[in-house]
Amino acid sequence: MKLCIFINTFLLFLFGCKISESDEPTNPNFVYGKNRFTINVDGFEREYYVHVPKAYKPGNAIAVVFMLHGTSGDGEKFYNISGWKEVGETENILTVFPSSARYCISDGDGISNTTKWNVVPDSEFKFCSGQTPRNDIKFLRNTIEALKAKFSVDSKRIYLSGFSNGSQMAAKCTIEMSDVLAAVCENAGTFYLDTTYTPKRKLPIWYQIGNEDYGPGNTGPSIPLASFDELLKTNEVLPAYLARFKKSALRHIKYFSLNPNFTMSGDTSKVMLATYKPLVGSDYEFRYTLVKNMAHVYPNGDNHWLEGAKTQWAWFKQYRLP
Image 1 (tube, rainbow, N blue to C red):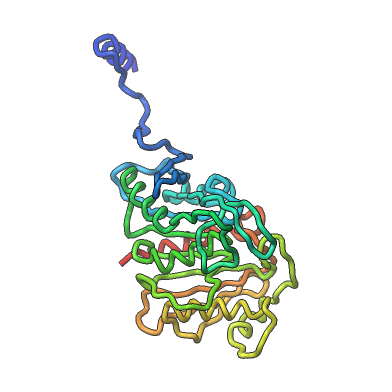
Image 2 (image 1 turned 90 degrees about the horizontal axis):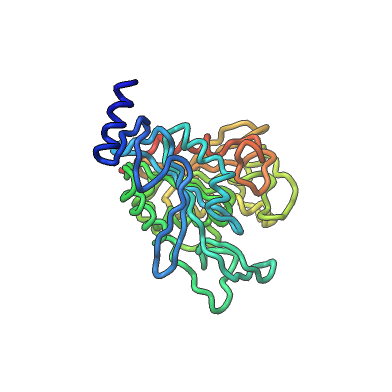
């Protein structure tokens, strides 16, 4: 110890510098814990938050998980409440929380000014006249490249999860970013239109929704989990609040060439899971879960017993980009 103090003192006197006694590596590009970064995309400054776990070592490739917030939120809000930064710290994952842009939009509730991911026209809202919708696919792709410049990123293990409007964006990413994403989780939002999409790659997808979820601020009857199987199979004409379950499944079946015959598993007191496999091959799947007693929230263990980030990471980590 005395020798170390002597060397530090001598070097400080001789060169005006000091040897660090900390074992923690330093890097001018980031700090351990919370980071806020900005990037210019088409002339607009965009922001994203990154949690760097203490176990991260530059030079050792690390997995990345994006978490996209919902309407009226931002990256910092979901950095704080989603539970992903905690999982990232425990599992040594780089967790990333981008912010969408703010717009004047019109929907069934009228006109408002709020944050939104640009998923139009596959959405229930429209941009007001005079608005300039941002290219969010380009933003997310550029963010990946920026992360690669700052960190040792494992390009085969980049994942994305989204909530509500952020989940609509996640659905868009399953089509337009499936060449760079290993797997995607959609939560409380998915494709809105019945159209035709051709994904860049057919990839693993997990769509999760609560049995009390009717969208932001809306309520309705609890859907019995025991009825999930029949809701996905029936050809009867159902009220919209019931028909939406099969419609969501059919869109994924269509876009990702899935076998419409699914296997059902789970527990009607907690979660029921329908698993769809591809018509050809076996390297991806579509999971569809209905969660008991969950309204329009991303479950974090506090607002609901389910810890979304933990369960989704356990599923994500089995997949790698081919």
